[in-house]
Image (cartoon, rainbow, N blue to C red; front, side, top):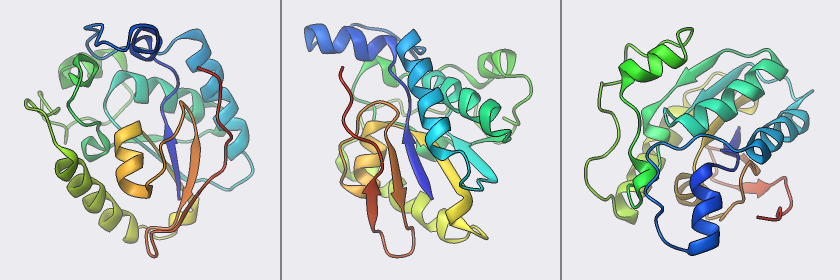
Length: 186
C-alpha cells in the first residue's frame, strides 16, 4: 500500500517560520500543498489503485480529493489515520461541518467530535498505527490501496519522517517500507 502525507498546510508554513504553534485549527492546504498533491497523484498514476483512504482532517481530505480526482478514485474516511494531538492544528472540524464541505463522502461512521481531546503520546499514535496495519492486512489487495494521513502517523507506521506529500510504499504484512519521494524544500 501507499502512505501519503498531506500537502503543505497553512500550519506547516507558519510553524516552519516561527517554530511555535500558530493556533490554526484544522488548517487547509496552501497553493504549494495543492501542487504537491497533484505531484503525488502523478507518482501514483498507473499503479492500479482502487482504494483511497483519508484522515478526516481538512488538509488530508483536500489532499485526498485532489488525488482522487486525478486517479478517479472514491475516498473513504478513516479517523484512525488522524494525527497526534500536540498542536492546535490537531483539533479537527466536527463531522457535520465536514459533511457540508464534502457532501459526497460517507461520514456516518465518524463521530461528531472524532479527534483526541487530550494530547496523545507516542504510544497512542503507535497503537492507532498498529490498528490500521491490522485493518490493512485484511484488504483484498493492499498493493492497490493508498491512504492520506500525517507526519506522526506515518512515522509510527514506518519510522520515516516524511515531507509534505511524500509517498511511502508500505507492506502491512512485513512492515517494510520505502519512501518513493525525495525531500522537498519547505
